[in-house]
Image 1: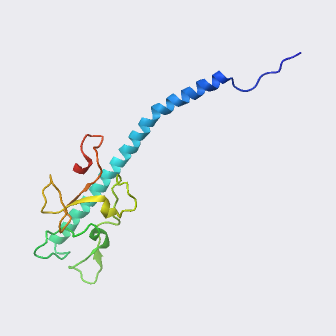
Image 2: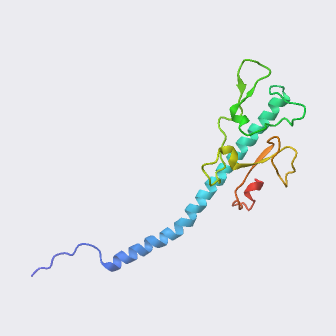
Length: 159
């Protein structure tokens, strides 16, 4: 009687393989979470830079007389949406509008996807102090409403 060659894996081999895969998964999970967090922080930095650049460009346009400014206004937009919707160009009437952003970026840490992009940001008015920002009649700066701190140890709302 000849015995045929056995095919397949033994139970011990399967258990060892599953244990090794489990250990590898445990080691990779924190690295994947760290990479995802680092990516969101990079998006936050880019979004803040983009919005703040648009706010500065709006202010320059006001200073150059391209955008109308009333006597009691600071020269910053009343709403974040004004950066996207555009403002009449006073220096070239009838030539269209001045746009400062193509679209308003969302705060990447905002959990509620039903909120409009402008609602995901905290807004600081021109007349509020930097250590206690509050909304007002204009938008001088934006900050993240996300709780917690970044990988650099600085709170997200202070970026």
